Image (cartoon, rainbow, N blue to C red; front, side, top):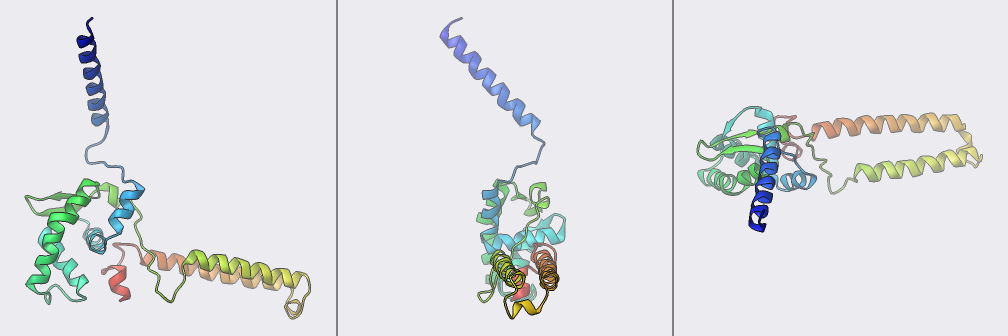
Length: 208
C-alpha cells in the first residue's frame, strides 16, 4: 500500500469515527458548560429572555419576547412601551443574543419563522441568581461570620467566663442551632424566589 493510499484510508477512518460520534449524540442535546452558563447569565437581556421562556414553557414568537423584555427593562407594561423601545430590543435579540444562545444550545432559535424555545440543556438547569443589595452581605460571608460568632460564644460559656457563663452551655447550643435553622430556611426560600421562571416577573424587576 502506498503512502497516499494509507493517508487516504486514515482520513476515511477518522471521518467515519467523527460521524459515528455525531450519530451517538441525541439530536438537539447539547452539553452546557459552566462557562456557557455564566456567559448566558452575564447579560440582563439574556436573563430576561430565559425567564420569559421558562415561564411560557412553549415556543414563543420573537415579537412577543421582545415586547415583554422591553417592558421589563423599562419598568413598564407591554401596552405602554414605545415602538423605539420595542425595536431596540427586537433587533438586539434577533441579531446578537438569540443567535449566541442558539449556538450554545440554550435555546432553539428559528430565525426564518421568528420563533424561540428553550432546549433541554436550559430546562434541566436549576438556574437562579442571588441578587445581593449593596447594603447586604453574601450568604457565604454570613454563614462564616455566624460560625465564628457561635464558636466564640459556646467556647466562652464552656470556659465559664462571665457574662456568657450565666447561660448554660446547652442553652447556647440550642439557641445557635435555632438561629442556624431560621437562617437556612430563609436562605432556601430566598434562593427559590430568585430562580428564573419561578415568578411572573424576573427577580431583578420584582426587587426593583
